[in-house]
Amino acid sequence: MKTKHVMLVAILGLLGISAYKIGEDIIAKLGMDHANAQNYIMANFTGGFGANYEVEPNFMSLPRLKLLATIVEGDKVGAAKELCEYIKMYCNSEEFLAVYRKTRADSKPGAEPPRMDEAVLKGMRDMIKDLEAQLADFKKAPKENAQTIALYEPMLQEQKATLAIYEDPTPNKTKWEKNYPEDPAVLVKDKLEQYLSLVATVDFNAKLTAPDNYKIRKFVNPEYESKSPQWKACYRAGKEVNTAVTTFVKAWLQGEIISSTKTKMPRASVEGNKNNNTAAKASPSLVVDDGNDAQEQNTTAPESAPKKSLMARVKSKAKSIINE
Image (cartoon, rainbow, N blue to C red; front, side, top):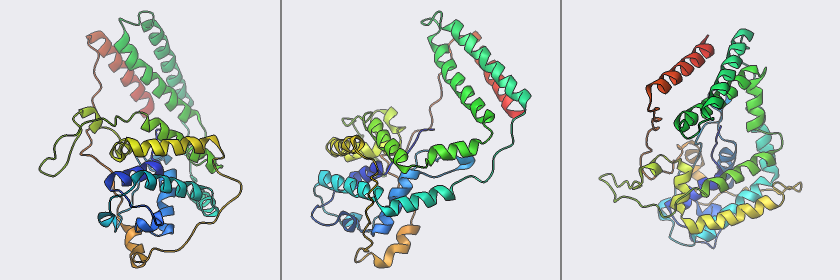
C-alpha cells in the first residue's frame, strides 16, 4: 500500500497556489485558527481508512482558505520553513499525542473477515509454486523473455501478498497496526521519508501547455498528467521551496522524530475567522491539480500469442481460486 499523503506535501500545494508575506504568525496569515490547522496536519499524517481497513490512496486534505485570494506575494521559502517548524512543533506536542491516540483507538477494527478454507489456501500455494517455477525457466533466457518476466514478477508478488493476507488470522488488525503504529514517531518518520522519495522524482523543468478554454494548463509530457496530486503539488511549489523543505526534513530525520519532552500548542483563533470556524471545518477538501489526471494506463500485452494465452490461464486460475 503506497502511500500515501503527507502534510508537508499539502503545504507545498498551498505554496504552489499562492505565496505568502512573512512577518506575522503563519497560521493567522492563512486565515485559520490553530485547532483547524492541527486537524489538517493530523489528517494528512494518518490518512483515511476506506474499505477493508486500507488507507485511502492519494489522501491529501487541504483547507479552503478564506484569505487565500488576498494573500500578497512574498517569501515562499520563508513561509515553507515556518510551516515546517509549525508541523514539527505540533508533532512534539501534548495535543498531537492525545489526538493520535484517540484516532488510533477509533480506527481499531472490531471484526475480521471469515477465514479462507484450507483447501483454497493450498491451491493458492500450489499456484505460487507453479508461477515461481515458470518464472525461473523464463529467467534462463532473460533477454528473449524480458516482457513475460516483467509481467510475471509483479503477478507473483501480488499472489504472495494475497496469500499472506488470507493466511493471517487477523488481517484487519495487521493493517491497522501497520497504518497506526503504537509509537507515532514511526508514522511521522515514514511520512517524512515518503516526502523525500517523492520529491526526488519531480521534474521541476517540466513544461506546461498554454491555458485551454477553462484556463487549465496541462503538462506537455502526458506521463506527468497521471502523476499524483502530491507530485503535482511539489512541482507547483517549485525547486527552491522544495530544496528548503528537503533540507528541513533531512535535518529532522537525523535527530529525535518526536521528543519525550512535550510542548503545548497555542489555541488562539484568528481575528476575522472566528465566525467561520464551522464553515471551514465543513468545507470540502481542495485537491491540488495541474489539470485532469489521466486514466490508468493499460498494460501492454505480450507480443506472442502463446505468452498471452499462458498469462490468461494464470489470471483465470488465480481468479477462480480467490472467488471460490
